[in-house]
Image (cartoon, rainbow, N blue to C red; front, side):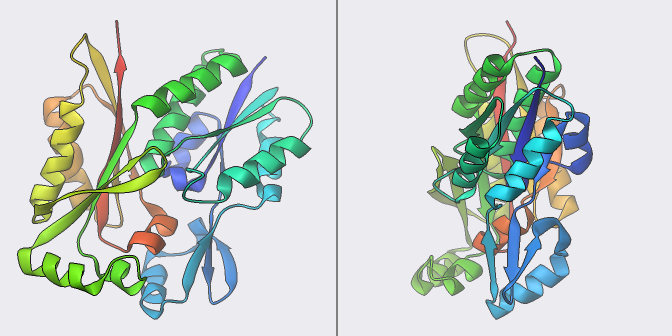
Length: 281
């Protein structure tokens, strides 16, 4: 029986790539002045202007949105695997589970335990297995295997937004600015964990690239699967990609945006990489 994959838009997948892999994307929501809007409908300039006012929040898709996506997926497949943003970061997974319970037929929901490009890489691997003829058990197993291997590390230009939101004390911002320290954080096991800061933005991004390359398995050949992520700085995005490709020219990669939902939570100026290494022998 054929399988289709559904994922929420926090996965940072470009629309053409999702369509190519028969992935149905459910939009996350951005709430501006009490108006709920799909995240893809909010231009970056408007989002940044609204962030300054503090009248912006986010919401995961409602169960009905997942139900509609499942129905769409069933137009091309018999069974559906739904992949979601980490349940520790959003109610998205619980909405998907409720929709799956109400839908007839075989629908499974998997919490990817990650976000942004990490979630996108899980979805792509699962979708490729589905397109290769894998059944639902095999597609789910592929997704869970990548969840165990995927990494996502990002850096911020500054802590200003996190201070305004109350997530970081102002004292930390002052110290970081005085030292030109750029925060680094890793999404691991469902949540974000702070790493040691780097001295300047270039050093922070170099550290991310070095972590990606150092993660290569030592017990045999492997192929790198990579998501390069930024929030509106194409030049910086390309520099990150070029640094990795200089060492791994055969990497499978895509460029994605951290997107409005991520920016609402951490602020503009966020960039990073998500990756996993696939053994090839």
